[in-house]
Amino acid sequence: MLPSSFLKHIEILLVEDSPADVLITRDALAEARVLNAIHVVDDGVDAIAFLRKQPPYADVPRPDLILLDLNLPRKSGREVLAEIKADPDLQTIPVVVLTTSQAEEDIWKAYHLHANCYVVKPLDFATFVQAVQSIQQFWLSVVTLPSGADNG
Image 1 (cartoon, rainbow, N blue to C red):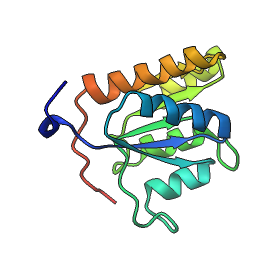
Image 2 (image 1 turned 180 degrees about the horizontal axis):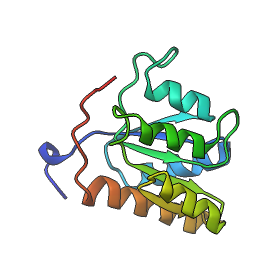
Image 3 (image 1 turned 180 degrees about the vertical axis):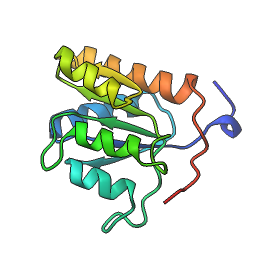
């Protein structure tokens, strides 16, 4: 275990419209006991508003990591991903696509839009928790992320 001086507070934006998946994801992240804050929006329009600090999200922190579902209301995850990666102020935020789609076309499109990785949500609870914890372990413990400089 690292001394507390080495622990970094991580801001995670979870873009997910399924309340059950939000709950499972929160539980899995909490179980790993990493210092993080999880902000949740349930559609693509709110995800972009959050990232651009538009009302009602004017005072939110810039996320260090985005967990993005593809199948969202109002604006799809694909559209959100395209906007994030086309915006010089947002494009350095890692985006993990976390979705139920196993379609080869969705996987190719997500990587074409510069997703940092693509994870298919496992159907059973234990495997889903394990997948989320693996994402957390890799992106928040192994990888060095850019400092959370607020560009917005």
